Length: 82
Image 1 (tube, rainbow, N blue to C red):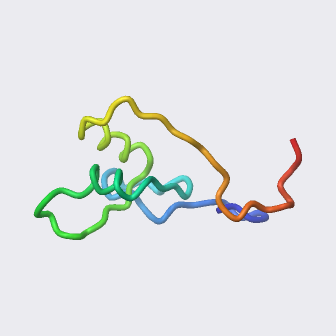
Image 2: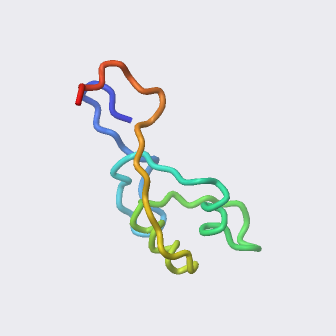
């Protein structure tokens, strides 16, 4: 999240490519589990950058894919006017 002069960052390096996450992001839990959890692999959760998650989505056969960007809650009143 970006507040003031802070630079938003994700949870940590991507488990697949090793790059830092450029921002905080998430997806629906059911969709995440369908893409990232395989039967018999245990409960270890990967940390994925958006690019590697999309790669896994395509490999799992979920196509087409669309993104919806929204402000993170809570919305702040100091947000610049349009």
